Image (cartoon, helix red, strand yellow):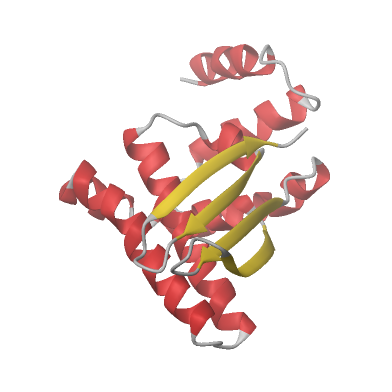
Length: 171
C-alpha cells in the first residue's frame, strides 16, 4: 500500500503547476484524510500557494441592467470542505437536482441583494451558490479540486433566479 501511495504521489508531482511538488503532496494528503475536519490542517499550506478565490456576483434588474454587484474573496479549500458534507446528498438526488441548486441559491441571492440585506448575509448566500456550483461541477462535471481551487467564479443572476455561471482560471 505504501509503495502504491508513493508511486501515486510520484505521478502527481509530474503535473505541471507553479508549486508542483507542494501541490502534489498536499493533494495526496488531502485524499488520505477520512473526514473534512482532518483536512483543515492543510489550510495554511494552500495559503502558501495563493489559493484565494474571487466570487463575482451581478444581479440584474427586470431590464437586464446590473442592479447589484459584489465581489467576495473566499478560501476555496474551506468552501470545498463545507461542500463535502453534501456530496452524498447530491449523488442520491441526481444531476437535475444538483443543477437546480444553483438557480435556487441564485434566486436567494437576488432576493437578498434586492432587499438590501446585510453584507454578511449576502456573502453567505454567495458562498452557497459557489458550493452548489462546486458540487455540480465535481460530482457530475468531473472537475478536479485543483482546477476549481485555481479558479475565480462569476455569477450573473436574473430577478427570476436564472444563473449564468462562469469559471475562469486565475493567471
